[in-house]
Image (cartoon, rainbow over all chains, first blue to last red; front, side, top):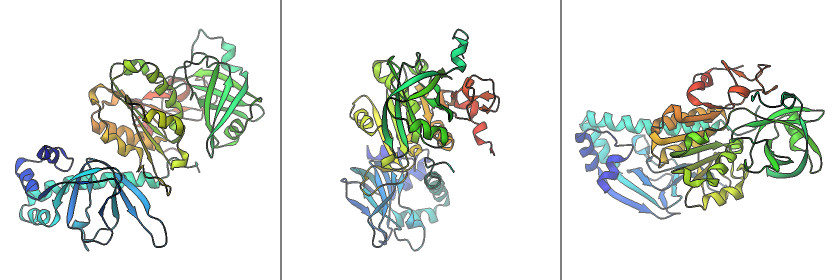
Length: 152
Length: 277
């Protein structure tokens, strides 16, 4: 069941069997969070990559002197957290469970080691992560366009 | 344009009494007019006339099964729509219609149906959903995806809550920017499409909203596996005559009033990418 969830996640779909086995070896298993639980917090070391399989995760930030602002919601099939790839390897935003959430947790250090050791796996992983990140960037651009706002 | 219709009615508006005006958001109201919609089908529009100001193409937003009144949801964006949206009960508006093509409700029967609404785009899709709910057994899975700018700008919030409470309808709502007390989804409506639990090959999709939103929605639907021929959008142009004569609403070789407003996405996909002045 859990293995099926990993194989069917957008981050792993259609991976060759060797790459899939490497990805599975980096997995720490499945975790769940109740609605309202914090999943990761700004400034903490980014040591995990989360493949969300169910539920909604709110990406938030709390500017000084202001209330927490909900920036974007990610859903099942998305990846949460890519700051582990980018120095200084610390979370740039907060992530809170908007509903009950289930995710497959990957050890970020093992992922990086495996990608360095096996470029084929590294490319397969990065290709999929890049697609997910690009989707989020496109969506963010659409949000910025204020599509439903008054016409100029 | 129905050649069997009285040709005079195509040009000369009826005078319709305003029965009710319901505020929807800060700049949008739903106007209820006496007299029916002449058997309109979901997706069609009427030309609503603020006497002395001008006429505007406004989609039907109410129940197509009601023959005693007709509803139009109007967003105040210019002089004419501001005048239409500023009427009071007891005043009158001009009205001629219905015009244009409707959503392919017959084609959607027997399969899964996805309705994707962005902003005011929910208004022309509401009659489609009411049609579905009046004959729910004729459709398999039905999903309504709604996007809005902010929580306070969601159209028909009470009705959305009613629809959400149904067990035979999937309703997902998202906003582009959250208010302090909003704990729902934040993001563009296109992000909800990959979450759909439908059989793509048997799915018909109805999409209405800003053209950029419709274009990206169609792309996401295609990625999901919904055949492009099953995706329908509603195009809007500067409609004047509404009967395919003046050419103001021309979009490529199509006239939005005569060949639309509802068109198969595959007919307009390329046109939507053309930069217009």
